[in-house]
Amino acid sequence: MTGIDGFLDRLDYPLYVVTAAAGGERAGCLVGFASQCSIEPVRFMVWLSTANRTYRVACSAEFLAVHLLDRSRHDLAEHFGGLTGDEVDKFAGVAWHLGPEGTVLLDGAPAWLVGRVEQRLEGGDHVGFLLSPAGAGAGAALRRPFRLSDGRDIDAGHPA
Image (cartoon, rainbow, N blue to C red; front, side, top):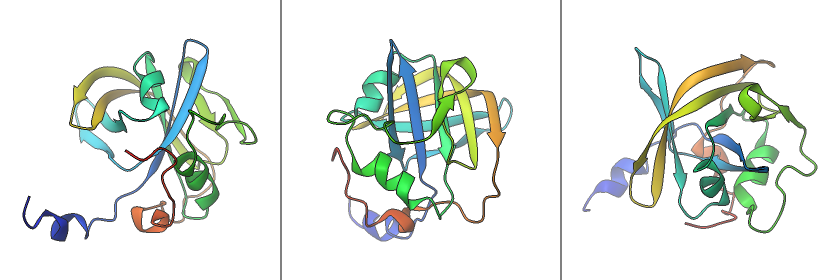
């Protein structure tokens, strides 16, 4: 599409870590395509690459956890964005605990949302998971969300 790069190159949206647990498996990945998409009722949409193991686990999950990272947590962003769950256990060596509805919550995230998967929507090489809030929490102060520009140096562990 002509000219679209000039628009997209100016975006600097937050990046999130999304975790999924189902069938005794857990997975997580760095996500750039996510946003609140409804006010009443509150809904949040997160888009997962169909190339990711997280997507495959999420297809069987009833709930997903979305973690907002602080700019200071480049290590978590790089860990979940620069490794592939097809080759390593991304949760080894990372502090986490079980959250609402059996979700996996990262201790290093200053805020998180757990959402029930209400719908899945095909969107090209990503599938959107429409979430209705089932729980949320905030811990440490968030100075500045981790954004796309903060993660430009992260090489995708599982390129789409």
